[in-house]
Image (tube, rainbow, N blue to C red; front, side, top):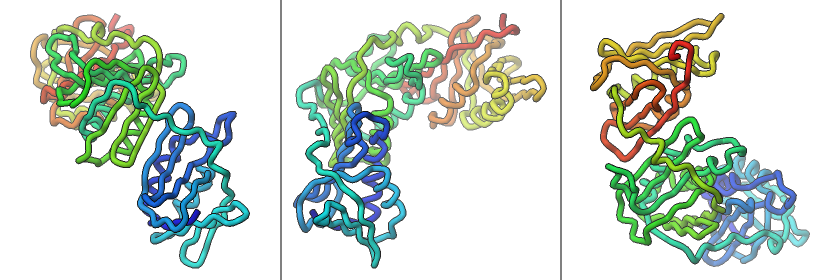
Length: 379
């Protein structure tokens, strides 16, 4: 096995597949990256038995072959290599010679036959979608998924294709995530060029890695195939496959408030900066921050005993009730403001301890629901 490739190309590929690799496993072989050199170029693969990825790289192949190289060590080496052409040659003793300038590494390899092959999802419902749009949808929802394995179903993102079944929702493609304290839903009306009616829970980690791969990509369509227990994504020379999460995702339609009593329109960036300042104080008191609407303005206030307090005043356009007061976890508010790109954002509040709703001003099919916090003042 012998080939050469550009350092930038190699580092880009290794950094992508290396993130899939897990070192905590009873199967040590999956701590490696599979290298396959052929006339068509170089292919890298990683598989942690939950998520697998393979991608093609440009390479000049002198001798075809396949082998395994330790992911973490290889990643560390590649990141430190100088720019330019990097040579790889398998020695007779089973070590891989990595050559650059006048220097070289010799890295122990393993045979490729014990590496678990990536499953190919061939049978299932499929559709095509613009990769840039899909990345945007992932970014708008993934942060709301749960990070706790105790709520395993909520560590995934619900992927739906088909009619929404919700008044005013004309989307045919939706991503929904929730951790029980907040819910993010992004929908789009697009020409999917494929079958309808899909409902699957995709691990958030799989979508996170997919978004990294697709960042900045356009042109080719992303092909998605969904089977009863797996999902695959193919874009150009990249193939990512993941197990689906089995279980019942909460009915998000029941969570979205049907009406609000007060609608507050705020400048998104000013709101974010004010929320981040309030969070400095609120972090000492479980992130509890009071939101009060009065006299044409929005007031954010937080207090931590023995530390201090803060009051932020924001100019606002108010429709409906001129007075409202509720407390939220400010971290859940800054999370969503960091992904909303519109100049203005709408905050909708109901009566009592009704959930708050945050939406972009432009009417995009995006809605963010956040549960209020019961406080002594609120009570």
